[in-house]
Amino acid sequence: MTVLDASVTLAWALPDVQSDAADALVSGIATVGTLAPTVWPYEIASGIAVAQRRGRISTESANEALTIAMSIPIEFVHPRAHVLFDIANATGLSVFDASYLAVCQAHDLPLATFDERMRRAATDLGIDLL
Image (cartoon, rainbow, N blue to C red; front, side, top):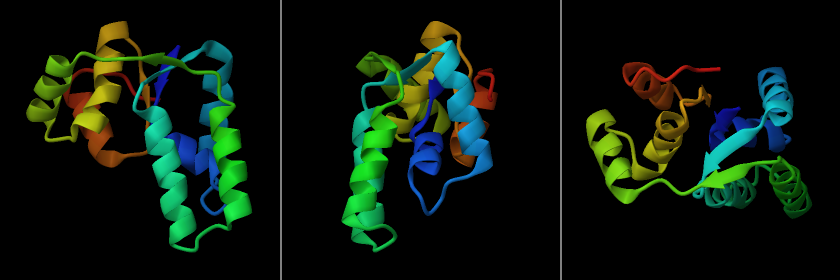
């Protein structure tokens, strides 16, 4: 199992930023099981909405990207607020980003992310990366 960050999902689902690295990560983790914090669907919907609003993708492509992203079999986890607060303070990340690290720590799982700040924070906390 692994923890899937929104950055990987968006790079996989959005047609204007799709990459082989994202394809490989999502294909691999979908077969071994995936966890994500409960904020994940909101981050995905927000990222796709922003891409549409900025004219990067059409409304039709946005709807397709959301459908594709929501097809990933994910088990959602609700981290505790105090844990999120502590991780955010320790790393300088937002509480939303800290939620991914909290899930990694709680379940002793690696993190799949393309976000460099999250990668550094995960490494500092001893969390493995994919």
